[in-house]
Image (cartoon, rainbow, N blue to C red; front, side, top):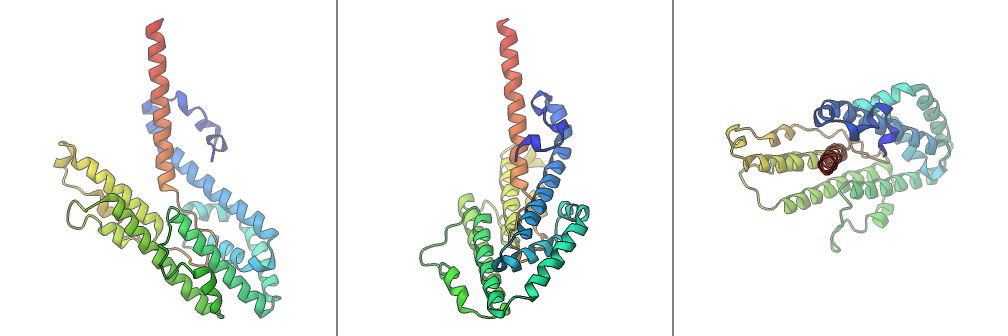
Amino acid sequence: MNITELDSKFHDYENLTLNELEATKNDLIAAIKNHRATKKLSELLSQAKTCADSDLWSFIKGLENFASSAVSEEEKNAYSARQNEVDTLLSELRDRWNDLSEEKKLENYWNNAIRNFANWLAEAENLQLATDDPWQNFLTAIKEHTTQEAIENQEKEAYQHILAQFKAKVKQELGAAQKDGEYSPIDDSQNFVAVKSARTSIKQSRENSDSPDNNKRGENPVDNNKNQKNKSDYSQPIIIAVAIVAVTTLIIMLTSRTLKKRKKSIKKNRHE
C-alpha cells in the first residue's frame, strides 16, 4: 500500500522530527490496520458479486468470516460499516448455492481447499515443501475425497503440516537456541502470524541481551506470545495477516527516511 492511501495527516511524514514521528506511530499503525481491513472487505465484495458458480463456497465462507467473532477489531469495524451490503450479498450467494447440483458443490469444496493450500504456503513466506513431502500432491489427492467432511479434514491436516514446516524453517534460520525454552513461543504458536511475532520477539530479546544495560532487566519479551490462540477459519479463502511485520517495517522506513533527510539538511547548512 502507499502512504497516500491514508489520511492526509500522515502524508508529510518526512518532515516530522523523530519525537513527532514517535508520537504519531500508534495512530499510523492503527490507520494502516483499518485501511487494510477496509480494502480487504471491499475487494472481497467486488469479487463475490461476479464470482463463478465454481467459487461460490469460497466467497460465502470469506464473507461469513467477516461477520464472525473470530476476526480482528479492524475487520469487525469494516464489517459493521457495510453490514447491510455484506448480509444482502451473502443471502444472494446462498440462494445460488442452494440451486447448485451436488457435483458443482463438490467442485466448490475442492477449489476452496486448493485455494487455501496455496494461501497457507504463501503466508508461510512462500514455503517450499520438500520433493518427497507427502503433501506435495495435495492438489490432486484432495479430489480423491468426495464429501465435505473428508475434504475439510484434509485441509486441517494440511494446515497443521505447513505450520509445522514453517516453524522448523524459522528455528533453523534463527540457529541454535541460546537458552532453555527460547523457542517455546514458536512451538506454541497456532498460526503464521503468531510464529512471525515470536520470531521478532526472540530477535529483540537476543539484541537486548547483548546490551549491558538491558541484561539487568531480567525480562524476556518472548513469553508474551505463549498464550496466542488460533482463530483461523480453515475454510476462508484468503487469510491476510494483521501485517505486524509489514507495519514494523514501515515504521522503520519512515524513521530512516527522516534521519536521512535531516543529515542532508545538516550537510547543506555546513556548506553554506
